[in-house]
Image 1 (cartoon, rainbow, N blue to C red):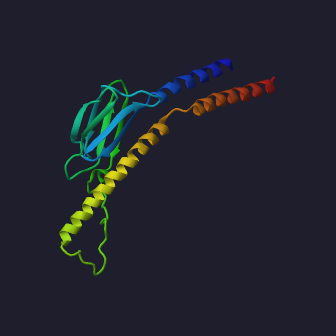
Image 2: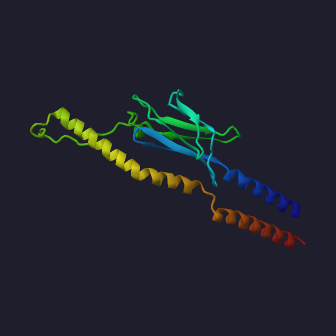
Image 3: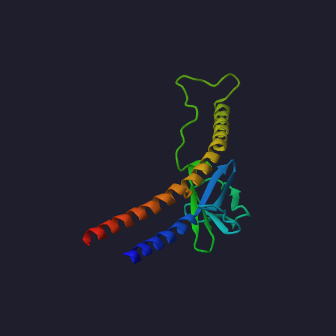
Length: 193
């Protein structure tokens, strides 16, 4: 019985570091640049390791080595844009990827509605052609999109970090589960004698 508990404890002790050392990639669009970084769950950045950005067909768009902070950046590919997947490989058994949808890059994968729907019977203001009004609408939509991205980007980054962080409560839950199972096993053993 003691051997079984010891074996269970060893298995659990070796499982936690594997989870705490998992590699993750965070990527976001900032204007005409895709920026991001690679980090290990539990802390630390994946510095000076290779990364590659590929389109949906597997063609390489950009590649390089992460900086001292695990960061990378490259230009948003020109149209037609497809989904972009950034993969980081530490060459030590840790590989992670993040995919940015074409809609976030200004692509056509997701059909975007007209930012300002035309009203029935509406005409362009005096001195404003329909084409100029449409261009103004597109510029306004791009400005709003950039402003929203600046506000949402840090929130997405924080969410990613919190989602993958190994919490003390998770570790304590595992320890108390083991202790509870050991107590139940000892109780059953005591009832048999």
